[in-house]
Length: 342
Image (cartoon, rainbow, N blue to C red; front, top):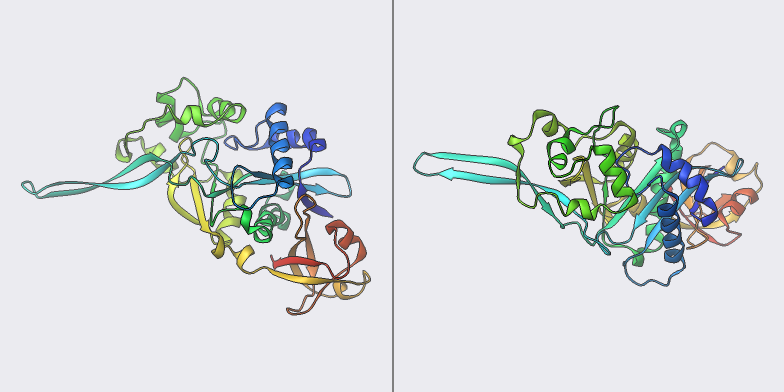
């Protein structure tokens, strides 16, 4: 059984193993023990804190295979993007250049650096091992954190964003970075992203151009890369688009990847989830018949757990869980769980 739970410091070595294989551009998962240790420590403090509004907290989850006790995925939520340091994006805009005398009226696509998305909650750090990419378990790794948000709405903003890793080739070169960022830093894309992962994206972003960039002046390859998704990030993109996220008017300032945006009230896993009581059953009883897959989570904080189950559940009725599953979730008879169909 795979279970999502909060990361613990004892997971550090396993988390670093996952980070080492994550795609270039996932700067929230640096292959650096010190940074990952800080990430886990901050997450543990956030889960333990009493919170009444979204602030500087961040919540880091891991996906554990209970049969092997190995980690097969991870994901995270930042309560407020830009709380401790600026959160930069490129905003897609249209400038109008017109001349009455010449009867010319041109609309020009430009990119403007901005902080518009500051204050939104931010989904980050998604990774699953290659054998789970495209499987139903990737849904658990991504969407179970949304159930956590549903259980604890006071900890998060009313809107959520996520930056999807943009296109780079098999050599780690990004046409978008080469057209813009590389002109300001003597670094290739892979080196720049590694530096951001170890230190911070802010200090590089602050040296990027603050004036509008006219898109028609960029090379064709850079223009084509805008809004493109890296193949290894496609699973994240597809899951969140099915959740109701939209490609908003923003792209990443380094690789041009799309930034997705959604109101919390419109996210499928939150809006369609239901809190239902638990009924303990024998393994061969209610859960034994034909059913459909559901994401199921408890409503706890530090002991948060979420699993993926085949259930023959009828709305308005308790959900039947066998003892082993109830123990994995940390719930008992009469407790409540939140569930949503996959």
